[in-house]
Length: 503
Ligand code: NAD
Image (cartoon, rainbow, N blue to C red; front, top):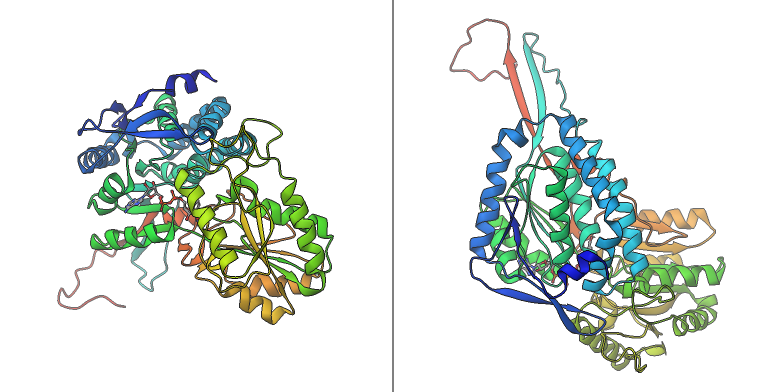
């Protein structure tokens, strides 16, 4: 156990508001559990509307405080770079905290944390590149130009599956642009965001620029999304919660960025190395226990190789090593929450009841060392149909439904027959066919001969009920800034005050 983990073990963690660790006004705390044992390991402040209001006020004050507002762009960029260095210094500790909180493999969390400093560096470079334009307007004695400004106080609500990675994609550009932030992490995984807040303070960000309020969605989360002092809500989580948040925010005419659920199609044609495709499908749905928004949970296989493929996939699924997430040999850790385990079991039973067949997995492992944790075997359900309940709803667990398809027309119809539109994958050697699929599938990201390959330079974000708005790349500069138009008349002339100047 690292020093920080020891400090968190059994501790009461407080909010981070205006640069200070702040106890909840209500005096209430919530319990966070270790998914490998089901036992509590720390408490976090159970925030409510009063705590959220204090955090938003601190962020509003920081927004106009000269210490932040009048900081030069380059100085802001340097601060973000300093944060990158501190995250690099503490990456292993942060990875271990997240593993302990959500049960994901240590090597997966180390990979996520390892890439995070680069993400901060990338967006730090944007701090001094946010620029407007001069616009020719047919008025020769006038100067018409635009300014890009920070948007204001951004409310960020994150889920438990990859708390810091999902936060970083929006926090880094928001800070580089000069916004201030109130973060509400998932009640199941508060610790890593609070640990990051300490680094933000160490980096030297002025007080109030970043605030963290922990607590439940229905109290702290709701209060944040209803607060009139927020300029934009960035939400990553389930579609049902996203719908509710967008409704709350609409009450204050506050825009949102929505990163929601998925039920992504993963396609295998008969012209590929089947073992490589099996490996891709495994990466798509069993990595991270399937607890990723982009899980390729609906697998479509060309009919000619269907039987061969499902045999190989089931064989690989049966050989997946289930164990403690800190163990180097482990390939599948526990699910993050007891409720998640129950949900997975329920949907597997729906699949069977609806006529799919279990080719691998389908139950909790019976191994003595695992029975106390929230483990579930990697599960392959074959002869699935798109209309089965487990093929329609997001399960967020290690469960894949596999079905054959005959031709490209049928494939596109099946792939797009979903409420979601987050990601899609295809394995084929035929580039024409791959491009036809990429153009016709309703998905924000399409992977060809790869899956679950992400980059902070590329815009990601879903269509349909998977949400709206993009994170990553230059798109975020538009997402988190506002555009102001300024007009100067340098003619010296006096105009007719009763006529609008259209020409
Ligand atoms: P969730 O919707 O239950 O909770 C997400 C966050 O919203 C938590 O912080 C929670 O406290 C908060 N919340 C809950 N109810 C709220 C309310 N009424 N008002 C305001 N906040 C509220 O999701 P989860 O179970 O934590 O995460 C899993 C979901 O997240 C999956 O659906 C997954 O697909 C999605 N996800 C999407 C992406 C993406 O980038 N598209 C990434 C990761 C996870």
